[in-house]
Image (cartoon, rainbow, N blue to C red; front, side, top):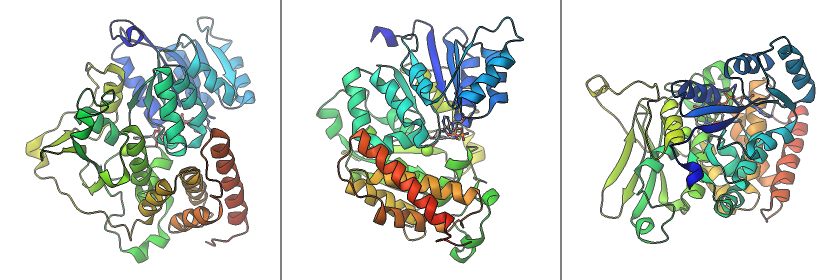
Length: 406
Ligand code: NAD
Ligand code: MG
């Protein structure tokens, strides 16, 4: 584990550096210039923002998803003689920088299935992976965890709930085969319940994209904000927790906790419960992922218990938030079902953003896809990618033909 020792400067590749998690990561790194160096930055389409980041951080590589955008950035950078950054284009370049010999840590912060192959590339090449891209684990959990084991990678969850659980578990949990594992009774994922926890169900049909993205506690990208409003986010996180901590579904429980102060808990067989608390700020889990097993300043605010007053808890309503049920069902079925769950959710959310379907159609589309698209039962990477592709294609056609009319 010398390569992961905290005494040497770590070179970091940030996949999705222009997103919310990417930018928070750069903020944390900015406060520890002696510990971390930015090695590669990547973005989908936002040339301007990536250019600003390149000028500030001077990475060895910058990657854009398409070759044309990469050409524009490369041309723009020519006028800065002090910038030696090499600009690459195309999805293979994401895998290249994630696997690069000089990369020590990979922040996997691309949104959606688009992050699968680059996250997997980091997993195959023995990196410390700071995993924000939960969709890749949902799609390919077993394969992903096997790659981590075989390559000696370190997987540090960045999703706040899973990071909280990581902090609450015994130190030897990951390596221990028996004793510390047997001491865990269940994992308790907290959920804010999103902006529509108490909205009358008949009002949900008319929800706008802006309302759905208006999360009460967290500032996040558009897709995960809508996932929080449908609670599919918590559904994906149940699957994520089962894979990360090798837990059966029955041992992962959800508790609605609207204040988002307790980020998750672990209950032990003796009745003890460990919880991790903090302000709802992703810089906390990001800093922990970067510095583990040490700690560094994250730049997040501190809790004021006198101000907080009280914390509350309630049972999740599986009838109101059907996505929770579909996620559990997909995980139980296994094979390509979780990949279809994820692909159908991505298409449904994108169609809602583009005003092609209603908010309430999102769970209907997922339900339909799980009925119609999950036809294969093995979970090789080829099957997963094919199921993902076929499901997206089928639903795009169905939505185009207005199966779910607005
Ligand atoms: P975001 O939309 O703000 O940023 C997404 C990033 O991915 C951008 O840099 C974008 O350029 C890149 N990207 C998008 N499509 C791409 C494609 N096809 N190819 C290559 N790059 C692409 O999203 P975010 O909120 O930062 O979330 C990123 C990931 O982290 C998601 O998986 C999300 O579930 C997870 N996560 C986010 C939060 C949060 O607070 N924002 C919390 C927990 C987990
Ligand atoms: Mg989360």
